[in-house]
Amino acid sequence: MSAGTRETAGPPLVAAPHQDGVDAAVAAARRVVEALLAAGDDTSLDMGAVAAQLHAVADTLEEHAPERTRRLARMWEGEGVNRHDPVTGPENALAPPLTLHGVDDGSITGTVTLGLPYQGPPGHVHGGISALLLDHTLGVANHWGGPSGMTAELTLRYRRPTPLFEPLTITGRQVSVDGRRIRTVGAISAGGKECVTAEGLFITKELPRPQ
Amino acid sequence: MSAGTRETAGPPLVAAPHQDGVDAAVAAARRVVEALLAAGDDTSLDMGAVAAQLHAVADTLEEHAPERTRRLARMWEGEGVNRHDPVTGPENALAPPLTLHGVDDGSITGTVTLGLPYQGPPGHVHGGISALLLDHTLGVANHWGGPSGMTAELTLRYRRPTPLFEPLTITGRQVSVDGRRIRTVGAISAGGKECVTAEGLFITKELPRPQ
Image (tube, rainbow over all chains, first blue to last red; front, top):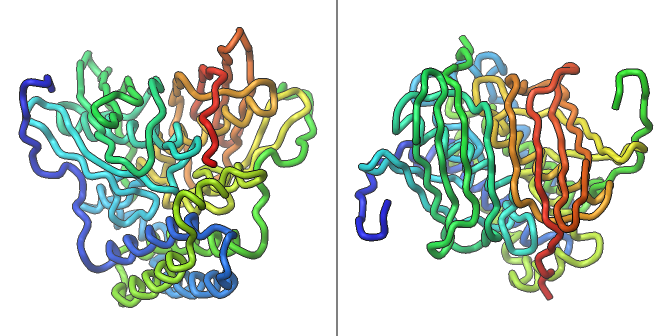
């Protein structure tokens, strides 16, 4: 997108979180994950009691969980496909979650602010977390822009440290398709400056869905 | 490591989780994150009640958390440095956590089994999660093998899908130092076969620690 044009972002390309059900419980779990890092060991809290409360929640969930094979099959049915990944998934507390929108020019874009769970160097985003966000964004860009595939090669260039606690813009765009070889690029920017850029080579192939 | 020699793995290069305190609460939070994915929306559970229980835990933790600037300074003091990252950190529920050991030949190695939170393609590890684990492992390999630095460039090659629910071996090794430029390689293997390999270029530089 050039500086002179403002493209219109379309509807989300990833699953939108519900305000209830498992998505609401996962949103609460994200708060717990971040608050544990915020509290750390520098506290007068009874962490044994916190652990006991969390184990009790996990016990209840595990008692009600279907057998793994059945759960995997269910995950990969219909719209379930986009609900559990560690980047955009409303059912996955590891995911910030990032919401990505298609843009009219064929690219995709999203904005996210990352907190303590995503820290690498002091006050900055872990380089591997940037790689995780970009790998996923490039995959979604393929879905939006043309044929999709699995990552064969991914190169990340770290141009400046990526800040925590500030809005980051994440973009992706499929740039070429040559037979089964797809090339896709992306970037993470803060304050209008690129922090990390990515180039991916994807091969058109999909793993079978569990039955 | 050649097939004919068995190197001795040394002490852990990353923080060992405690069995109590915040580490125990974080271990319980990991169970919650995984159990939420295992239960999904395919359950008779009252997810509103689960959300309320988790919000109550988060409220308590947040009330006791120090102010962010003070918490960041504390995180980066002494041994705190290795306790909160999203790969090995005992205080970070995003981390599996991976434990890495130094090997006599200058390389490092660790074993980890990943569950539902780390899923990308059906039944397999997300490519971005492999990137996250390898970026961090290469950084730790630098600490073990020679000078350390910040990631400038990272290239990942995906050779075969990486399975969930099976032990993965993760290795890293610093291969050269040329002035400020450090080159480091690593791999994730399953059942003796390489799934993902990584090459990183690091530059000797550190971000200042918060005061």
